[in-house]
Length: 298
Image (cartoon, rainbow, N blue to C red; front, side):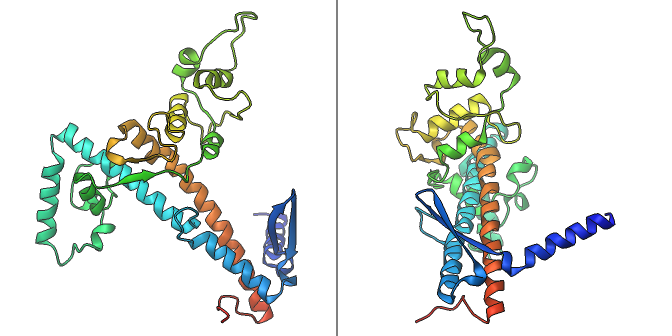
């Protein structure tokens, strides 16, 4: 790092730690967003801001979960998808039925019941009890594998995966899609038609829907069609997509656990960090003023 670079980094660090720069932005009302410097806030305002941040992180309301709560839900969904895929893999590749798997796991647990308690099994990875598994299955909690054996993983609730999130992931076409599936020439001009427009036409989407190419997070055409149709209930007649894991196709389970839910998890982690950063700012201001905004006032 150069001298100039060091000075620049130091200036940025000082700015980031200067409580006079901490701003609280309220909700937009009629397109206008009110702002207040945290150092100018009253004790009641600062505590209100702190409580709001905590709600945005830890709220357990199923309809509006906090980011930390949602991250736990997403992780469970990813592992549940993989648990169902594991049972299918064992059956097809090893001729090892769910019943056999469950019986063997119960025997191991009974032999080691002092160590493998019900609480431990919620996080204990199946890779420590079964060998030669594909890497993506190693970390699945044993409890979820046993639930998959019994077809008791329940229903997957993807209400938090919005159409807006799916469309914002963008599209990234495969060579097959580029050269064949979505290749079409304008009958009048003879020029290759825009493939985004072709996607909208094939799926019956509004021409005004915003879809973009994204080489980082983009879904293939088939992946996008699968997620969009699933979310809108085209195949399930349930726009909230609460189907049992065991009746979802393997392709959908893989798409969810290896890509879509993983990308959503990354977004939630970024949002959680933003709320945590704001909490840290509030606590710094409160400490400077000699206030404890974490206590409840009777």
